[in-house]
Image 1 (cartoon, rainbow, N blue to C red):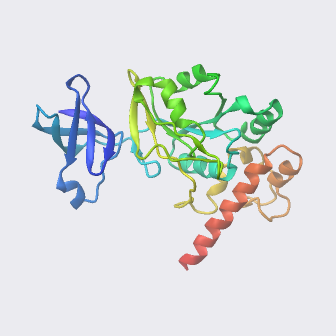
Image 2 (image 1 turned 180 degrees about the vertical axis):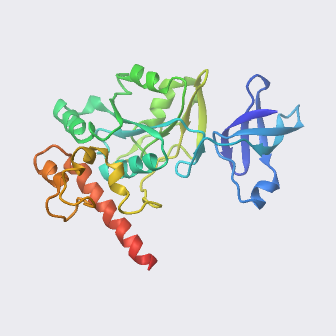
Image 3 (image 1 turned 30 degrees about the horizontal axis):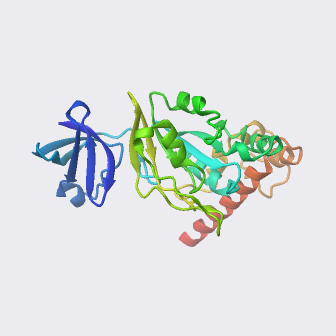
Length: 294
């Protein structure tokens, strides 16, 4: 019997087989021996050990179209990364790291800023200016006022989407709105540290509609960009592309080189300073990693 893993906890995999229902499964030892870990989103073959208890074993993992390390999921069509416009203030460095990771893995990403009901027009315009040229779709919503939710439903339709972002930005509340039956725990913001309490403890695939799944993931607080060459990083900042051919040097890294058209565009206000500074920070990290190898 075939199905899709919708949740994995402590070695148990919950496999949705459609009309035949949900089965609680263990993975065969062969996967451990081959160092293969079943992922949420995997299409699998299971053998039934108890029809009465709806139990079985995962005996085969079908070919993946892709797989993500963090968040850990397979066969993903796109990512919806949610940050709050305020409370907590958006961590742009964390956002840009996530965008680079998704681009590296070829995953289309939609950037969503929630809590627009508690900020002014000037704050929203600042976010638009910073990210409108980043190469990703940009949405502004208020889960509390249910503003922009139809736009979210539209981008999710017919796709398997990873829902990601830091704690406290309203991901679980958004999930509750999109799939009331999911019964996600929302929790309250910690007033002491002005940061969300962790409410999602595992990665889980939620069925929103026919052919539409939303993969909720634990909130992340830090990401390190790895498996990227430092000279590859500039390719993931797509707003640089309009200026790269005008740089004095073909190999320009847009850091310290003279005659850099990207830096000139930055000074002219045509490239986001927020994004550029995050690029420089990540470039420096990758450069240090490279030095440590030798």
